[in-house]
Each structure stands twice: as structure tokens, then as C-alpha cells.
Amino acid sequence: MNKSVASTVHKNANGANNWLKFTNSSPPPTSNLKKSIVQKPEKKEIEVVAIDCEMVGIHDDGQASMLARVSIVNSKGETIYDKFVKPTESVTDYRTPVSGIRPEDIENGEIFTKVKKEVLQILKNKLLVGHAIEHDLKVLRISHPKHMIRDTSTYWQFKQLTEGRRPGLKRLTLHFLGASIQEGEHSSVQDAKAALQLYMLVRKDWELLLKKRRSRPKNGNKSQNGSQRRHK
Image (cartoon, rainbow, N blue to C red; front, side, top):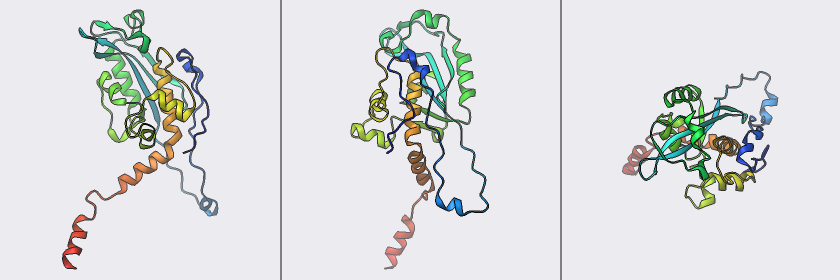
């Protein structure tokens, strides 16, 4: 795997917006393209965005989660959406040391229904990148087509780092990008950018693997092989 990166994540979560350069280039042309007189037009790549959410605790024990902030970045690492969300239930744990959320952040936040509508509009027909993204989608109360999701916590090469278990975003970013994140309070902008950078790092191999899987026959050759064995 090529471990070179276009930039590094700022160590301070508040400096997340300084990280704007991302690797998003097309694969290098092969030699046979040079021999072609007439080249077919390139297929337009699907747009990629990455998402991350910060959550606060609700209910008596504070263990249940409620959306407090949602951030989305585009394939260039630019923040295209970042909003605090007004609580719909009483908050029992702001989880500030991790979430970075304080009462004043969400008291004046956007109403949940509007945020949900805006996020759905942004994500429509886009490839969605995130880390353990099922938690983000659950707290947003939305769904996204499975084949349009790239979850960096499930990619096989990343899971090798933790012997098959789901690795944390902080560990992946340090190991593969050589950068530190989540030092103290988290930033959903920074975490979204980190997940995106990880995806871009392995994008070619990841998409090739998925393409191979999709091209496999659904039922395999079991019936044919079984028939051949019976006639031998």
C-alpha cells in the first residue's frame, strides 16, 4: 500500500479546517492508452463526501445518544456542512471531554428536522465515507444505500492492524497517515477529513476489490460442477 499522503491532520481539533489537501487523482494511464488513436470518453466518477457526528447522552444513565453536531466534507477536504443541532430531548451527559459539545453550542443549534433534510439532500447519489458510520446514520435517523457506503472501520487492510477487529479512527490515522487526531476533545470536521483521507489512500484497491466481488456469479458454478461429477 502506498503510505504517502498529500497532507497531515493538525494535532489540535480546532485546527481541522487547516487540513484541506487530499489525494483525489485518477489512476495513471496505462501504456496501451498511448497506442490508441481514438480514446473513449472517461466515465464520470461518482462524487465522494465524508461525514462524522458528535453526540451527547440522554436518558437517566446518559448512555443513549442524540445528535449534537454533524459535519460533512467533500472529496477535496473542504467543509461543506457543519452544524450544531438543537436537542430534541433533555441532555444528561454532554460528554464534553470527548464530544467537545457544551450547552451553549446546541441550545442555539439548528432544529433536527431541518438538519436531517439538509443532510439527506447533500448525501443523495453520493459515495459516503465514514468511520463506524452506522452510528452516524442511526443518530441522524437516516439510511444510505449500502453499496454507496465506504466504512473505514471495516476495510480489510485496515483491520489487519488490529488482527481482524474494528480499528479506531485515531489509530488508523496515526499508523497510515502519520498524523495525530482526537487529542483531547474531538472535532467532527477533523474526523470526517481523516476518514476521507484514509479512503483516498486505498481508494483504487478498495474499488477494484468491490468491482471483482460484484462481477462474481451469484450462484457460482455449484450446479454445473455437481453435474460434471455425477457424469464422471
